[in-house]
Length: 241
Image (cartoon, rainbow, N blue to C red; front, side):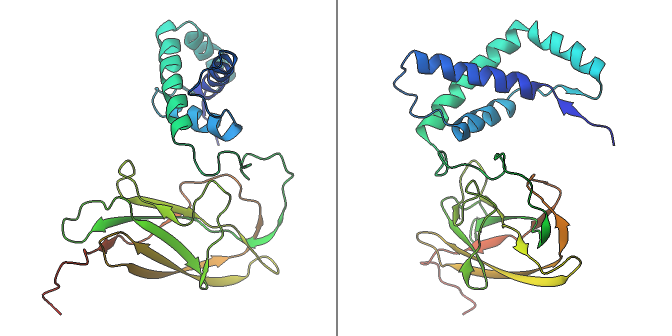
């Protein structure tokens, strides 16, 4: 398989780290944290707002890197967006911002038979307007207990936001298995509540086969879409009842 790479990643990572050091040295009051996770959030913010530059060969890396380094407008855009991202991240830090992420750790791979779950994605809507429901609390349970997530960057319960159009995601931590190639079905329950709305509970099954692998890297293709769920206001009369 051809290895495709976005060379903007290295450029943005390098520049964002430089910006953090410069702002720290100046003693800027608005920079409340410069931990690794806050820096990663800022890097992600920048990469999502500049055009990627993909390469598939060493020659492509050399040519495109030279082009990037000589593009003064692109450099200015990275600085502007980087500072903007730093401010936003400092004002709204994630709950795990000082906690080591599993995926970002240096720990050796632990290869053992396990059931590896796909990411679960779903959406919550207002049952009357069909608009995305903002501010809903979404809890994922497994066997009656709050499901354990892959790492602290995956919140459970989580909240739906306007920016994500009422969508939510979960990534459950692997379940150890006795050996490879064991088939098992897992039952999960989603509990959704929101102020002024009647709560909703939805259960679904996930059949899996255990494997000898260590899946620490997020694979967006390996995902399961939960059916859309609708909440109705608690003051709306259901005419069918």
